[in-house]
Image (cartoon, rainbow, N blue to C red; front, side, top):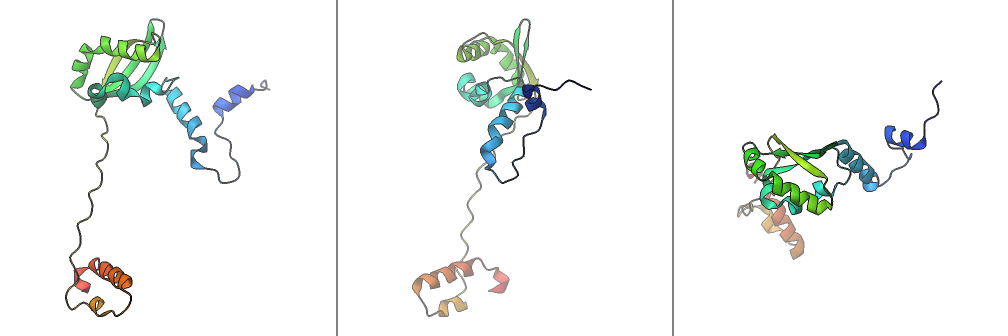
Length: 166
């Protein structure tokens, strides 16, 4: 029979506890996010969350943190970089290490490693729909004899009706 496990071991291996009732979606996000950052080696997620401030907008546009691993010689930060940008970033590695360590307040990053791959770009905002044409002149919506607000609403709905039904 195996010895009983400590509470801290049990909490790290077990899935989140179910409550048996509906809870807010954001209630467990902090623990889930902390676990995801820990799997990538980031004990402090501010490096990832504030990457654009730390690295600068030019570098943040072409690279982002992927993984952090600590070794005997110091930490290694792995960056996902746009194809072709790794050579440029290799020349900027020393100054980037200095910026990161200055932000963190300690010499956490000794080496930067680059992995080439496409960064996902934010999706552009959806374009607004084109205004629909006015209903035909013989449309029955114009014959409505009721309140003006309701007549305007009916005309607006008639614009969205497919042309074959008009």
